[in-house]
Image (cartoon, rainbow, N blue to C red; front, side):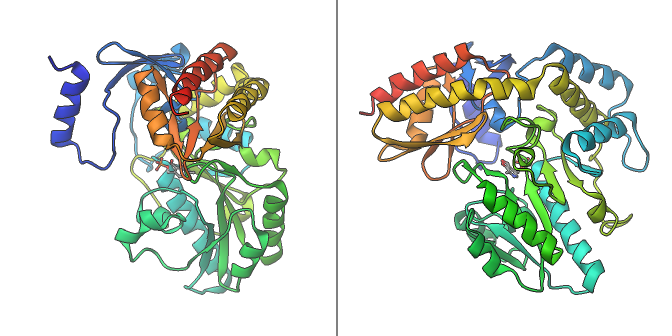
Length: 401
Ligand code: PLP
């Protein structure tokens, strides 16, 4: 007899475009840090929907707030103001120390907006139409043509060329490489504060500081992509806040809506007042009351439940637990990461095989580039969940010796 999981998988493969190598389970519901599939199997979740479900599943306040908003109004368009949009923008600017917000529907759209803003800022300055952006090798910024153009991964780009022009790539954490790409056409430097998909590489503090200084010196905009590493993930509301740098543009998504699709790009006053004006950029859904009610509630809950403080408290335990695995298994070469964005790099053993085996053993994990097991648990995890994860993972790792 086929299981419900198999039945949904077969039906799905008939009608859903095969752009993902999906695992053979259909998830149905969640509670806290646990998920259940349609056959009733329970999973401990260390993936959080790729860094989205920061507050855990089925949070009662979050669910209630969304229901309340649904009873009021779900959509108005950007021709009018709406209450959740204004409130969410106020909270987001306060949390980020940025000045203006443009709400989007996804991370990739936030990157598109950031690219357009940087080009317009430079255009208003010198009237040129050949501006360049410096992005990083092994970066990931999304799948739309603009975002793909700044994504430093040849395999993702190759079949979709020509991409947008004027993009140069530099080596991450190598300031000489960045400097060598700067010229009179450079309008922005774009990087993830902590590279996620590329293999969990935090920016070196000196590197980021030097980039900030370079940008100031040349009036180049500093764009930090915090779509994965922002929103408390690394132990501060935004990862750049730990580095003491202040970007000109920040992109944000994933945990901002904790499941309801919402992203944003945030600008400082200098950039906002010399770039996009009415007619330059828009979206039907961006700033939608339902999505912004979610963002609003998430930002409130982060404060009320002291999520950032919790990440700071639990991080050493997570790091110690992962370090124990590094010490125990020769084929784990190192641990890298910040806060609850961690990676274990493997040698000889494929990270994707470990992640597949983990599903059998009721644990959801992720991979990242360069043969890395990636850990992005809900930010509410406790020590007992870390212990449980390590026990399951250790049992799998043993079978690869
Ligand atoms: N930027 C970063 C750093 C990401 O990790 C992602 C998604 O994984 C994106 C951009 C694209 O975001 P989205 O998938 O919401 O379009």
